[in-house]
Image 1 (tube, helix red, strand yellow):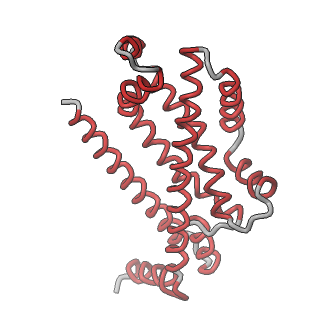
Image 2 (image 1 turned 90 degrees about the vertical axis):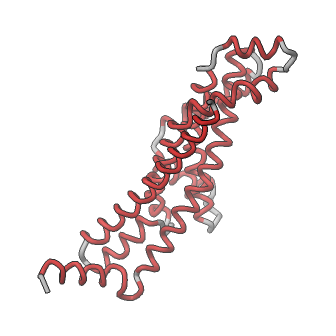
Length: 232
């Protein structure tokens, strides 16, 4: 048996099979996907809400107070590191909770919402104002025109940027281990500390993230293709 192949088998055994260490990766993968899923949902809801408030103020002058709140939210969240936000959420805001997954979901969701807000806002503002005027002239209210005319077009425009934000969010969850969450990165670090060999656990970790990112890219490409077909 070649020495290189023997080394690979040995490293694979130590990383995944000894003491059933593959369970650490499976638990870490599960937690990473849970955090990403709920953070994406929260980010989209928050982002759309902030974008709607800001575009409504820009076009009608209404919701002035909420627009100020939205600006403060965007400035604070986009101006501070995600790591700091995670530590503040864990040690200050939700210091009494033992549900660390909740801490991570809220932190990453709130953080993502600030970036999604600007993505949605740019998409909405990119639509020709004449379309809003035409919709209003047909008797639609501002809210109806936004939902039925502006948003469907805006979503198609921002889908690539929104998909990129989802991918960034997935990779950002790798810092969850700093608040005692066994995510995928933390699992690899635990295995590394037990095998005393960083190469195989970290390369395996990178490969897992790469597969997930490629899956998301494929999914987003299919969504873009389907939306493009609906335009024909």
